[in-house]
Image (cartoon, rainbow, N blue to C red; front, side, top):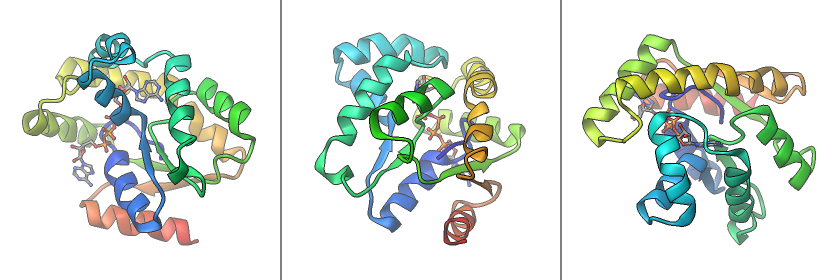
Length: 181
Ligand code: B4P
């Protein structure tokens, strides 16, 4: 599941994984759990995440590959937030094979709406990286590091784009339709 911060990828990935019956694997959630548990990885990631920068590829990739070894991921997985740049896409393929991503779903939302959703979440949940300054950096990091993955998967005929504007259930209907086509 690809998309800028606030596009709803975590929200849609959770719904879709439940509907298909495969695990929802969110690197952002896993990193936040490591921060909360004060693990060695969490200590290394905390400051980087609070600034809205990407945690080093080798740390995130090692964490993800360990997760994908668990028995619930044997028949498939829905990745949310990984790969985050072409180097991570390459690392995943090197570890799991060229066909490890069957389909990339890109959720598209205009920037003004992204900012208003994330500021709304900041009020509701107080996530450390939802401050106005950090949101701007996360959007810049998305444009420079993650957006090139859209062309990467499009070039492999493995991309579907979904309009992420509107209510959560409306977007989910579009995601499900795109998958069925
Ligand atoms: P993530 O957890 O992936 O954070 P995110 O990009 O903000 O997406 P998220 O899934 O939380 O938000 P969503 O769009 O669903 O990453 C956090 C940080 O972890 C990164 O900045 C980075 O530091 C690190 N990280 C993670 N993966 C990494 C990797 N692979 N490599 C390196 N570093 C990595 O939703 C946003 C809000 O919008 C929610 O409040 C939601 O309720 C709301 N919303 C969703 N759909 C909506 C709708 N249709 N209408 C209105 N609101 C909606």
